Length: 112
Image (cartoon, rainbow, N blue to C red; front, top):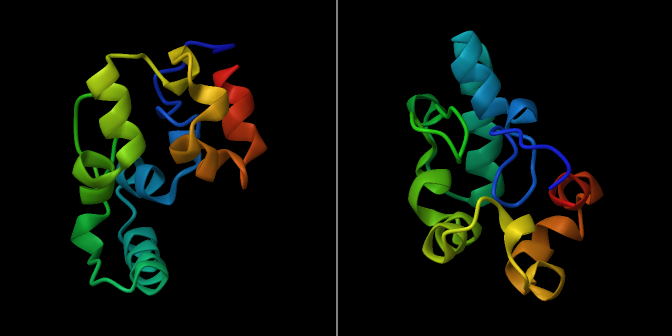
């Protein structure tokens, strides 16, 4: 990983750019509501504004339910005890993190 930024997620996404993180840090109820609506539609699941609280997936503190317990990338990284997927020797061939990297080159670059 080119930088040891704790707000780079296990997959390489930048938590500081995430609407859940920004809503939490700025206590922005309007952004929570907007994010909950978008995420509900994208995931075809009832996501409420009170579910939109996250301080980053690699730090202690609040997390969305997905980031906390449902994200397969986070679960794998914690099981393998790696700092991020960038520390995993299988990152380049991993189908799980590859699903993020195929749509987000910045995430891959954050891990290199």
